[in-house]
Amino acid sequence: MAPTKSAIPAVDGWFTTDGSPSLLGSRCRTCGTYAFPAETYFCRNPECDGQEFDAVPLSRRGRVWSYTDARYQPPLPYRAADPYQPFCIAAVELAAEKMVVMGQVVAGVGVDDLSIGAEVELVTDVLYEDDDHEYLVWKWRPVTVDDPSGDPRG
Image 1 (cartoon, helix red, strand yellow):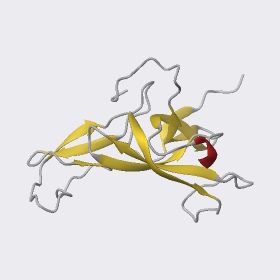
Image 2 (image 1 turned 90 degrees about the vertical axis):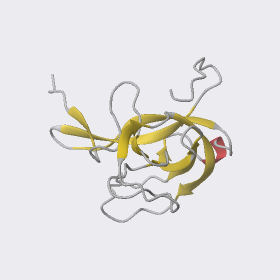
Image 3 (image 1 turned 135 degrees about the vertical axis):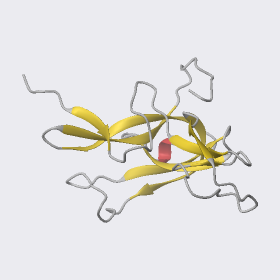
Image 4 (image 1 turned 90 degrees about the horizontal axis):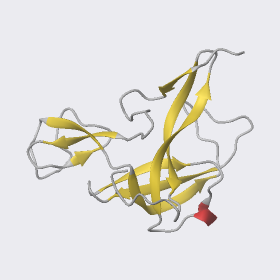
């Protein structure tokens, strides 16, 4: 029996890896503007001079704002499969936060399977692995009609 590898985020502090993963962002204490990745220095709202932030989990669900496919192999430090397999990328609007977050779409879902406004949810997936670890990233997965959860925060 092979030893179990521990699953860890490929980028520490950007998302949780529990059963219901979420992106980790920040909210400005002055104006309420959300940011991802989390902000620690200055508010991204050009009309605000806030410099204090609360760490917050972001909505796990959103709607496709735009999408495309990546038919070229990205340069390092991206670790591509060998041989390289094209994949789909989606810009997802998180309605509660009023922001758009980019991310890869799960394997098996391409541009022909998506549409503007389609609901998606955040999941984790293995980007690559070594002898001891599986390195996880977040991806977007379409929400099926059979999913009874209507909670936009997942």
